[in-house]
Length: 242
Image 1 (cartoon, helix red, strand yellow):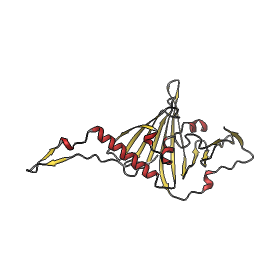
Image 2 (tube, rainbow, N blue to C red):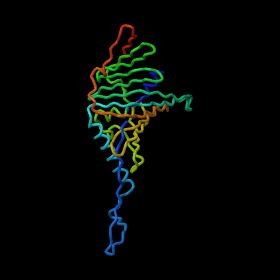
Image 3 (spheres, helix red, strand yellow):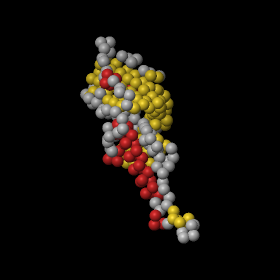
Image 4 (cartoon, rainbow, N blue to C red):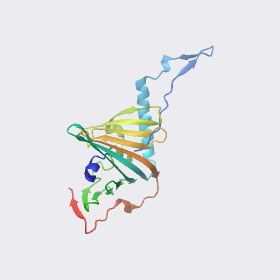
């Protein structure tokens, strides 16, 4: 169902710059290349530098626009009795506007809409003509991790961090949250030149996995404020969630 799919959507993707790891060499009096241990960078230091540069690049990217739009494909793998159960695929459009407005619009296979203006969240089930109204952002509305980047927060303060694929066009940032989180671990796929997040993957405490791939990303389009409000009509069933 649309609601089941939404609840495991973590906060949402951009792409981060790849990091060039520099090897240090010296030249002898005879012009020969040699290795200087005093100038060498240890593997652990290389990884630390890669992590820092990736985080800085991603944060700079997200701080550089006032609004963002993208298409997305969402894949869900649901656990059944401890084993991988059904897989579902949906698609739609994502929009964000400073400082806290978010819109997820599902087109296929089941139309649905999630809208937040930062103070109130509306979750609309089109098939059942039902809208749930929640205070605030709705908790994990844009995919958990993505919310921290969109809000300008420092991921170092909220997560245990690791990095994979340093030096390649796309770097993977692995995140482990603290206690009382909606997810157990997450991965961001980041373009190593631009800082744009192209993919997020979240595993919840039950083992369910959600992957969202973003495409056709546009920034600073001047999105209308009305996109982040929801108009309730008389034919809708309204559920107020406190």
